[in-house]
Length: 569
Image 1 (tube, rainbow, N blue to C red):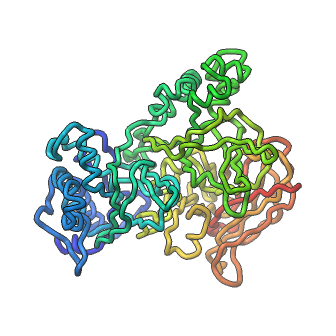
Image 2: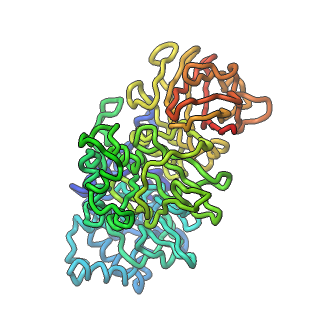
Image 3: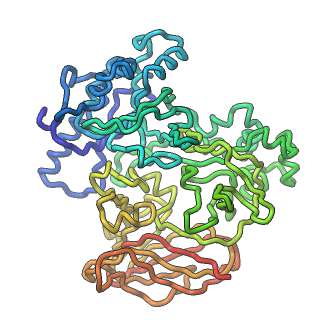
């Protein structure tokens, strides 16, 4: 077993219950493979045994150190720098996780220095690490650890890190003047990229406090009393307080479905500055005529839903690309969009008016919550009709798909060790509706999250693509985002293969109308990303979703990235 631990292994462990028994571990996610050789079964058995040790309540590797040449693994390196990290090392030993962080796997660790730990101990009213509750301390350590991935400073971007902590939470990164980098807007990285044999360590000046508050919990404070009441009377408090639910996967095995949302939060101070001093003032301002607030057609309900997105969207996700100046984003209000613009000075604004210079500014973004993120805004943000903009519709960008996928739009799924495949079953989610020929064809619809060394695949939008094998005449259907009424050119992007034996032929339809002729996605040059114009002009008379259908002509593989709608003036 020691030989196994000294060799690089791809551990697929992820905590599923960090708020109850900290001794719980999770099993390996092997549901995507329908058949296993004896060798693979033995490999996964070994990984399971290691996983049972990892984060267990015992420390089986006490007095063992895994080193390579002159370098040290995480815990040993921190112990060697006692002037900086002695208290954090004490905490690792107090939780019996010291040797766990020396294992020959990959970690990114945000390690509080001694000043940070002294401040934390003082805040807890104790004078030593040994006085801390062990269960709470275990969660605290795990919250500072990203297992299975090495993330260096040059990989940080504004917003949520795309890899969860060992408590299955998302930390956020923010940049401030002078090149300062903060974690969760509070802890400054005072020393980055401390290289260890099993990953990297970033030293921070404040202990990261594990997030337990949901989005709804965050607005329960008196600072948000008006918005909180609006959220409650419309019934959105239940959704914004939901973190997960226990489900059965397509194989009938227990699984956990996670929920993530984004809320644009308006404080009482902001409401007051706009002459809205109470909930009743807000109702009057919106022209609400009845108190059936739970009705999706009620103006108050629309207003609240307009401030909610059904996925976690960090400020980095919201930002406009260098090639564009503006884009629209779907909200949870039916057929209502918010517009994100890049001003003349490259500032991001919501519902920005280029003539007057008025718009909504995010004054405190990326506030982490257990089930998403909050962006505090400086305007009460009434519903506004946006202009027609370019719509880049990633064919995999759905909240439902994200909730059932272990990895989603990750730059390094499985720690970069292997591509992630999510084989979808009929009726597993409502995002895609399909029919295959012959019926119930396995592997008809697959979500693929690409890794960095996957060549052309990695350059797809959001590092992923939709893979179809529908049979001859089979089809799949999905809803587009809401698109502002107008005239559009429609283009599809896909992965084109040099080998025609691999690449299939397809026909596209929009709202039941055929878009051009069928075409094969193969080429005569080399594998690469390709696009095809489906139509130079399609007119949408209403701002709405639309039904997009793809029909497989020859039964071969179709690998699709996105559909682009470009307004025609």
